[in-house]
Each structure stands twice: as C-alpha cells, then as structure tokens.
Image (cartoon, rainbow, N blue to C red; front, side, top):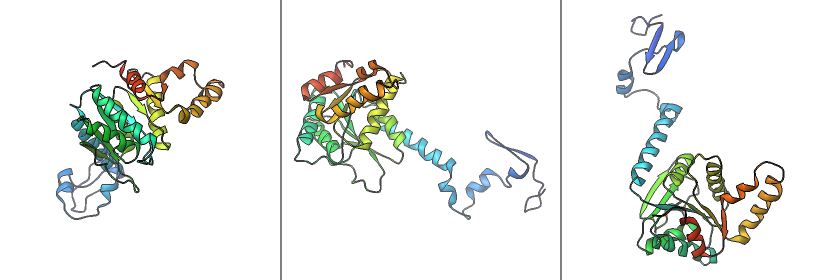
Length: 249
C-alpha cells in the first residue's frame, strides 16, 4: 500500500487519541491537511467540527456569566402580549428580583421574557438573555444588557441551570415546559443541589399539577413527595419570597 506520492502507507496510524488501521489509514499529515487551502468544505458540517462548536459555546457562555453573581432564571412564553396581566406580572417579577439582590436570566426573547428583562433593566439590575438560533426567532429583546446567543438548546439549558439559584416559571408553551421539566428532573435526581422552583399562575398550572398527582403519581410513575419540588403562587411578593428563601445572599 502506497500513497499517491509513492511513499509507503503504514499499516497502523495514530492521530492523537485516534487509532487507524488498514483502509482507515489516511495519507499525508495533519499539518498538511490544515494548511491545504484546496478541497471540499463539507468538513464544517461533520460531527468532530460540531463538537468544537459545542465546546466554544460552553466557553463563551461560561465566560460571559462566570462573574454574574446570585441569579434567578425566569421562563415564560414568547407569545405573551404586552397589554396582558401576565406581561405586567413579568415586569414586576423582574423588578422584585433585582430589588432582592438577584440578577435575572431569561431566554432573551419577546413576550414574558421581555417583560422580566424590562423589569430587571428598569430596576438597574443585571438583565441577562440567553438566546437561541431559531428560524422564527425575533432576536434579543431591547431590555437585555448581557446577552449570549446559542446554537444548541442543551448548552443554553446548562447555562440556565448552572448560573441560577432558583426558577420562576410563568405561563408558557412547549419550550417553557421543556425547561420546567428539565429543572424538576435535575432536582428530583439530585444532579443539582436542590433549588426552589415557583410556578406563577395557579389557574394556568393547576391542570398540569392535577395530572401529575392524579395520573403520573397515581400510576406509580413518580412519588407524592415529588409535588414538593415546586411551589404555586399568584402573588409576586410571595413568588419572590419562595424562590429566594433557600438561597440567601
């Protein structure tokens, strides 16, 4: 077996941690392939390259948020109208969290996220937005003063959890439910230190809570004490007290 240049090709080749043998051996050197400006560009879509992108997102996210200080993540619908009671509650929650000494983290989008960022910003606090690349996303809202955009949901969700000491969950859709159950699962399985989770809007969340109790728990898929992983509230002051009581600053 020989290379196109006539040089013999080794039967075994080690490229860093990777071992290649027989027809998996590559000709040329790593430096040669790096410096060769010609050739196909499909490599930017390969899994190894994606790993580098994922790593870079973690580095950028961790670097931006490392000195954030105590923070609470607030989730909610991007479709919440600005003239709604939910939007007003979001503004008040953002303001109250800052007044309590916390930075505020949202998904950085419109609707409930914008409301919370607005309250935090107007209160003079740190208003964080962790955005996500979506084909229909409207971009970072104007009230974010520290924003990070992500390609990957799982990197974004890691930052939501890593830098938060509690969660407040406003009425929302599938994305909000995804973030809620991610948090509940991490707390239930003790993958993270227990932190408070507050569902804001009793009438909105009561149907879900009933299903958890009457179906999920009743059929043995979870335990009754799992209902203690979260609190329900309709009052902004109570919600702030519940989400901050276990995380003194």
